Length: 410
Image 1: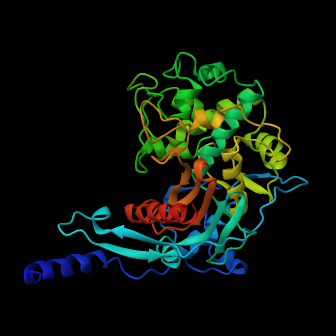
Image 2: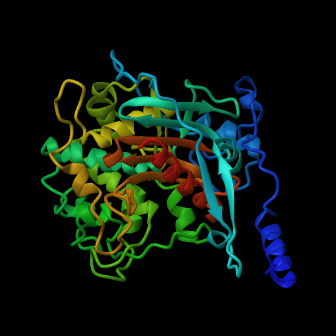
Image 3: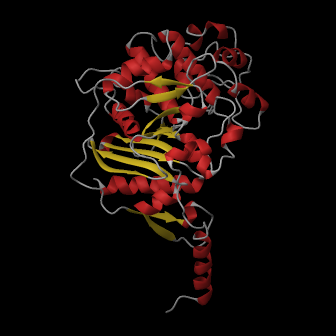
């Protein structure tokens, strides 16, 4: 019995809609020697109103030149490098499926198959590094990038700050994640943050009002504040829920957490990272970290490093901060605690995004990613220049690709 003509025509129509996303062109190529022609910033800080309208060429040039357009602090490499050897086992021919119902409501379920090259083009990948069992199985670049290119990580920075909280606890600068924020930022005493803990800020569950909307006037004001001004501003906000009861994604509060950590350790975040993580673990290249006008680094955004060093950060997390010589940088079982789900958000830990597989990730807008899968001893670091800050299709392709790579390397 043949397929009814009406059903066949419907399937063809649905498949046509599924395929109508247009050609996959990849990230714009910009010769690094011509970057200056495409750099644009007037504030010295990441200005959302500027970035959102950057051309594809401006994104590529801007993301790899944070130190030329923003105020940054250099995180210097040390005298030794954590080795990343190339695996004798190359990445198999990876193919993944994307189903039409993952992108649109449909009647007829259909899928389309993609490969590595498709993923790089569809998601505007500028750097992709896959590390299995401590060895590189794939390293590839596009858009003019190379192994020497620093690339802005956006909100991946939040997960780096999470690591520094663990280091500060190991060093006894912070007693525990149950310490109150006002213990380190006394200017907040008597405010809505009186009972908010370090744990609450790590899980974005302070219960204090914050509207993550780029058109909100308070959000716009907060982006241009010094750290002291931000503390004063947030201290004037109201509470909408008990601490720990409600998840509310807030860049401002992560910057507040960064200020609390800096107050606890008595120095800049960048120098503390440099001395306790970057140099002793053996990062290969210098990094940069965007800073407030008063010098403190922004906890929520804009750390910039090479792809290999993002991979090493993934290894640092996977090893729970254990250095090559066996010494520990983080408290025992810190990463287990940091990647345990919050009561208010089952897919979020201590500034890490959590997956059902037991893997976790540091993620930033425009496709920045450090994916860590402890059970598979797998790290995937991605640098991207998506056409938009976020997007369902990008995430669907990314998740499907990661699943295919994980299966292929078992």
